[in-house]
Length: 319
Image 1: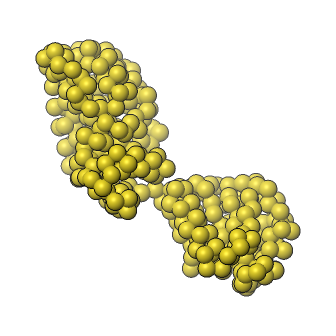
Image 2: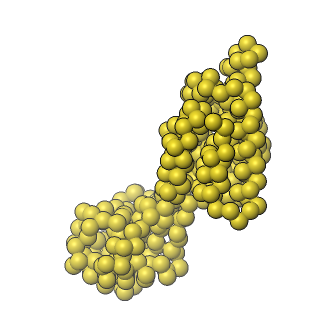
């Protein structure tokens, strides 16, 4: 039996691999002595061939796991032997697990790697784990929270997904933290804002600073850099809107001489935003925030390219 697990979402593919190992140990390998793990870069073909051709020790089968065959430098002779193995029939279980996106350029350049890849893709137990987004990501997060005995309100779910994105390694950690904090209760938006640090790279803070300093040249450069590295326009805009919403809240509290801590935001966010809020008047913040909301509508309803909308937004800022 051949099993192929691959794709950019290494969290789910690793969980699937652990699930298969656990099932094998429970149903077949009671003494935990029939699992062999081989790394693609350090492949010992003799060990592989021996494991494939021999039965299990005090068990009916062996499980052989080959990790990172496609993105590792592998000897041509080894690739040829693996290809021959794939054309054989045997009782043992052979799992190919690839951590991360497979480089198609490498696959195309090496004939045997391409043949192995194409053959494994067609196997009955081949699974590609693409990065989750949109409704699929929300469903995954909601189900994982419910499996831990908690629930999450819709707005909190929206905020959590916006903050973390498709990084399920980090998402899993944040879910564990939220579920421990709200054991068997409903996770609220306030809980997410308090405990979760948004996935904002430093350039988002720099961009907000550039807008506050009325440095249009730098703001344009930073926005275009974000778009060029394939950051989602929707994600980028949502982070900018979120940051200016926080600035509005902080500015309002400062003007009213009220403590900023009542916002129950992550301390790092409060620290950064408090410094930025001083660069704006209340009217300027309201004006920018309104423009961003209008831009959000245009991004979702018009045919105008995101880059043009961002550039127009910066160009229309007051001097």
